[in-house]
Amino acid sequence: MKKLLSIIILVTILAVGAGAMLLTGQASENNISPEGRSASGGGRPLAGKTIVLDPGHGGRDGGTTGLTHGTNEKELNLKVANNIREELQQRTGANVLLTREDDNSLLGGTDQKAELQARIDFAKSNKADLYISIHHDAFEDRNVEGITTHYAPSKSSSHVTLAKSIQKGIFEQNVDTRDRGVKASDYMVLRESSIPAVLLELGFTSNEKDERRMNSAEFQDKSKKGIVDGILDYFGAK
Ligand SMILES: [Zn+2]
Image (cartoon, rainbow, N blue to C red; front, side, top):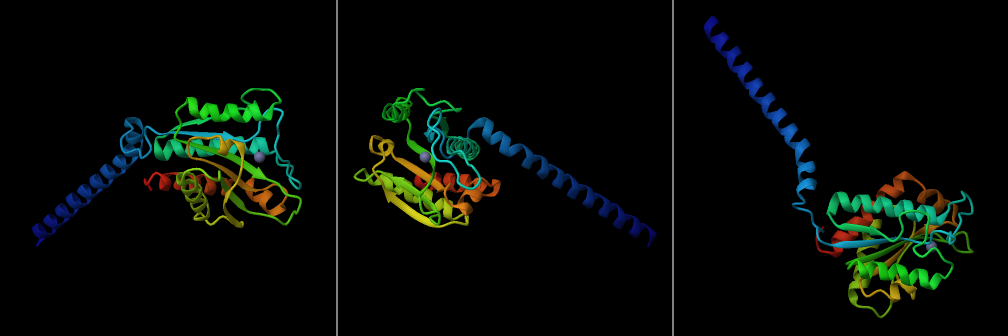
């Protein structure tokens, strides 16, 4: 009887030990694999694609100013573009370029048309696959709120498909504002772009609730995820 008890205890110790080793092994494997993936570049859905993010305005062109919290559009656009770049690099392996990295416009001048053309040319010369311009809206009626994704009218269907995918991705994150949908708009950066291009208006700085939301870490986190989901969806990689 005593011998049997010893055997049971021994077996139990061995089983627990093996279980612990298995758990440790799994844990260390989990720690290694995400890093291994990013280092090797394997299994990265958009490896080889180049995406240009254009933080709207910059330099002397500040864009809109928030009516309640003083949001500076050009600064927020840059912050949001940096967030999206980080998310794209982590999840997709795409090559991501920004038309501006700081508070300087690309040309530094006052000719807005030339500046916008330079941003389109930047995407072209870098052989980009997508062009995504980041903005925040303003309107005289302060009750107007929500998010819109614009695309150029009379372009190929890939432009509207991209716009729809991104708008859908954002609202799948349950963001608390109005879904204004996608809109065909005659913006120069969209009209002159030969590659699929969209312009995002991520809320109204003239609306108190929208302005508070667009500055929150929670929304910035949700929107960057939604935008990247939309991009992956567009490429059929979601
Ligand atoms: Zn703007």
